[in-house]
Image (cartoon, rainbow, N blue to C red; front, side):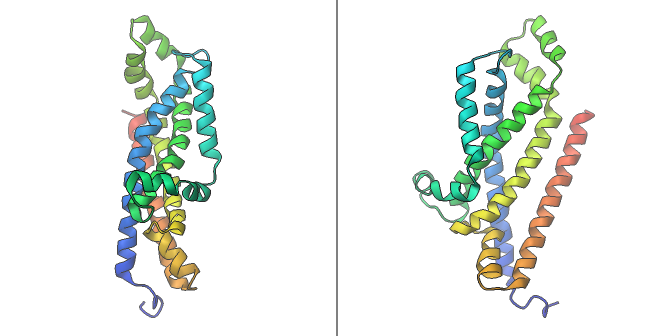
Length: 221
């Protein structure tokens, strides 16, 4: 086994794995916290919805579409000054989180909007007939009914963030992607590349399995 992985420093692999998990956890939490209300606003402000406002919807849609259309590797570079301003560094786990959130939050917002659109209109109408306010309709009808879709969207977003964290290694963010680039690619250490790729694949598989279980639970609750 050692002969197969001569160039692998397992302590570095462990630290890189921890950095990747920290980046994923921090950015996912902020992505969900920002993307959920943004998706709700996109839904509510659309035509024929509870708080229809074409101007607000058009502005929000434009912002979301612009941020979603920028390749993440370019977003990383463009956001370097903003990241420095926000967290004081563009390196390491802290330096990776702002661009990760900016890249993923609009993506999740669209998934939230799609999940809310799939809620039966009869549920909303019934809640309205009982005199519920818009906030009550959102919190007691829309979000609970859309929960499986919201969880599925969060799972897709988490998996996308794993790939983003790997790309963040290009600008010194650390993690498994950084090891894969510095050692696997630049130094042609194939064994390091194989280990990092396998760990990333295992992480994605675990996230998908967890997401599927949560969706099944939410669908039958």
